[in-house]
Length: 346
Image (cartoon, rainbow, N blue to C red; front, side, top):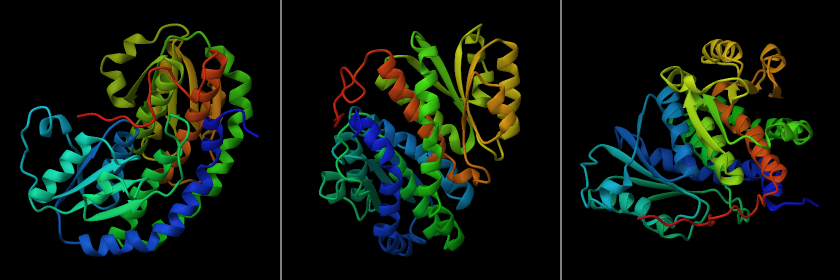
């Protein structure tokens, strides 16, 4: 039996994703059929972990579907009481609980303006789910640990299903069906992480760097580190990191680099060399043997994985790292100080 709820939920992700694909395939296909030709771009309202899933949608829908995706600014709708024109938008709310009032306010305004709406949520009876035209229900069961894990990967899995359905891409769906098994392979990094995490026990700051599809992963891993350990973890793209933040890197500065094979690999590889010259302490998540060997802590990925599904895998070593780093610092990973499972913002 696991010694933490969070660990149980991290390891439940392959089965949660497999169940999502089985139970929601017909629903997502029907949603895609209904929405075709009904919108010009996508606007996503989300907070926290769900906002990171929205960042993934920006890349996936932009690249695979040629659909522009924008992130909503809920405070414009709530605190400032002003609603921009949503003409041409499919407005999507991503929320594990479906209870955040500011996310709901964006969807309510979309309905008022006559725009199509969609919710991706773990609670089909939530206020958000009840207020929209279409719902993709994650169905992962109650997430008992405060830090979200299985709802994050299931949310991006739902986005990937929608992308495939909108483009009538059966090969994309077949590729997605491989993911649960690949997730289980990535979890084999657990013992390595548990045995090496003591090195970072006294760190007070770090950076997490990814680009392209894994820009979202950088934000999500950084959020998990902050939530579970209290370490100041800042996320960046490898491009933005060069525009000033690289100055933070001095001898021993921890930097987690997300470097799967794909279009951004060479850019990330070049950044790794720059960090080595600055004597940064590198944690690397990659399928590239040379990059893993050049890191202080190399966390391997399966070979021959399409870049667009890699965020479903690259986040897992980050989740495990945050879990065991919290334990090394004497903290309770199931109940981080100051946090609640359901966060309501206006």
